Image 1 (spheres, rainbow, N blue to C red):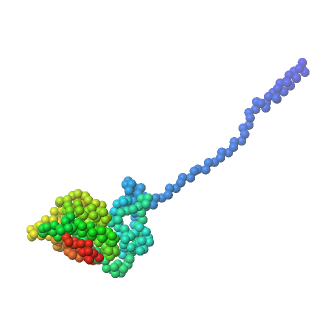
Image 2: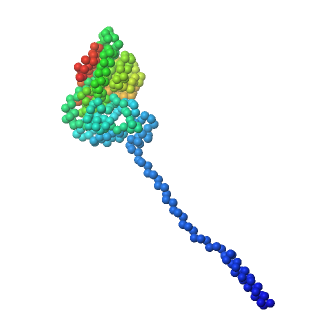
Image 3: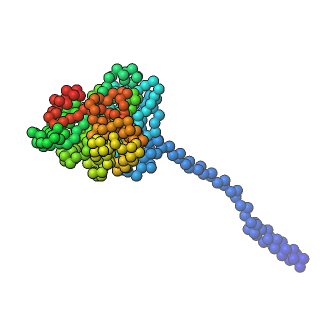
Length: 362
């Protein structure tokens, strides 16, 4: 019995001994360390250039950012319209120098060749909506030595009759064939066509103008001007100013090459003394009239005296209305120091040919 009991206990122990390893929980293996992920760097955006920032705000697909380069020039870019005439290009200042214009390349700026100069008489041609213009300079002595004199041509009405019109205004009617030949001559000879702000700066001695410069103007915006002459200046791409009597004509410009400026609103009429209202009205009356005319045209800048009549009161009224320049009918050329409110002209009448023009202006 004792032996049997011992054997039984031993058997149980053997069974328990064999089964113990299977009953113990398995010890977990050591966890593998996780691989650290390197964060993807956020790319730093390339800052926009001033020109690009300007374009980013423009909704016009033809908008062009024009930047400016040159010695002493630190100007912000401006928006222009690709394919349209340049509008209000800046005229920078630099101590001891006279500005000599904008050019499309630094080489052209160094040459100061008038045929390559860029201003409001040319169209903006941009690449990828951007353009850089390069400024040129000269000394005041060089500017004075140029002896530039700028003719302002003055036309009135036009006729298709080679023999001219009849009546006391016969001289006002330029034969359209002569006009076309004159405009072709100016275009072929590559005359420089200054804008009015350029003429203003030229008079002050702040801007050089080429010797072969000319400004083309018409008085009254007569129907014959619109029908006969405007197509000619448009064909030859010649910047022209039409002085409009806004009491009679409110339409917009007939051509991108025609600037419309004031010939007054209601002062192209005779006053009490038989002369124009310009020399009969008070300073305040003149200023109010010119303000009305400017509001219709959307520009001040320059006006033309009706009948060429002006005096000190008229000039004060023009100044008070905010105009910088005023054109007379007095014969002469614009030079440095010319009275800005008494600009002279070269009048073109019936019978004046292209040879007449050549003798007058070179």
